[in-house]
Amino acid sequence: MEIKVLGTACANCEKAEKLVREAVRETGIDAQVVKVQDTMEIAKAGVFMTPAVVVDGDVKCVGKVPKKEEVIRWLTR
Image 1 (tube, rainbow, N blue to C red):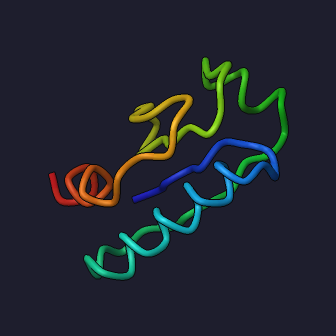
Image 2: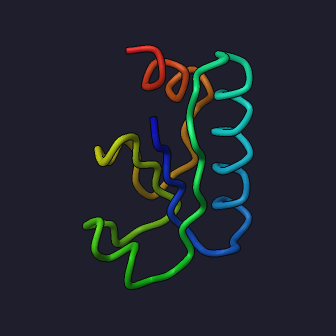
């Protein structure tokens, strides 16, 4: 599983990355978490507000820090 956290170095983007990494660790899911800061790469994903979370190519969250429970649901489905 590949999880991308899209966003710059803003506080909410950092929170989103930390939260995603915690959820992966808690669930024990075998996943690679990648932080994407390149604005062109973010735009290619169709995302124009950050932070955003993409799981296996599917955009799950845009413009907000997701709740950990949401991330866990995305990982365990």
